[in-house]
Length: 236
Image (cartoon, rainbow, N blue to C red; front, side, top):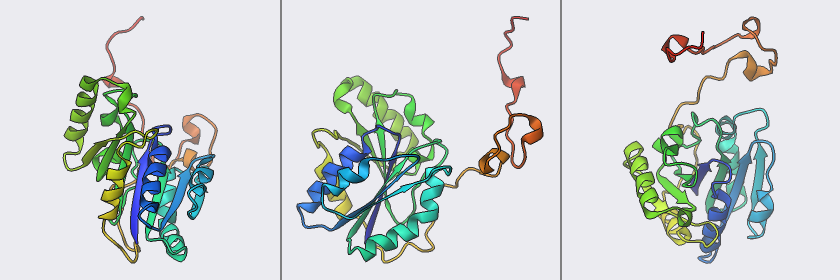
């Protein structure tokens, strides 16, 4: 079975792009299963069910969605195999920009909304630097010059990724994505696979439910700001 992991910030166009891509794949008689991972709520299962394919939704709740994926990916893979799928497509939420949900045995796709800012790529961290494919959405709403600067910044961060411009509304780019997915490697299992980037430490007191503010309540791995590196300007 082939596995595709697609990640990106909320409202970047992931679901629309994947919907058009899966519809193209279905036209080629490809059996696709989708796992949608989100934080608190998701309405996308109904979108994918309209394609008459197996869909499962997982909500990470009080966990980072990337940690949630790492914990559940083998079970998701096995679920898709039980459903008879040839292709498993995982759509997952973006969150802290320090994590990346990508694994070695998957085709890893990052979706970025180019309306955000030309400086956004460098703020996204490993979700950009470890991706195999970077999809730039909403390209019809910015100038050619802005697109070129955006792509230039992405290439600096990840020169090995294939960068494609896409449009989730019109479906532009979905056929090309589908063909790339068709040519991706097959795997019988992902047990023992590796994340492409380590997760941040999640062992402070607030990770396990603490809500009180103050040094007394801060335990575990604590990262404090170094105020000696701030501006010398002062009103005092």
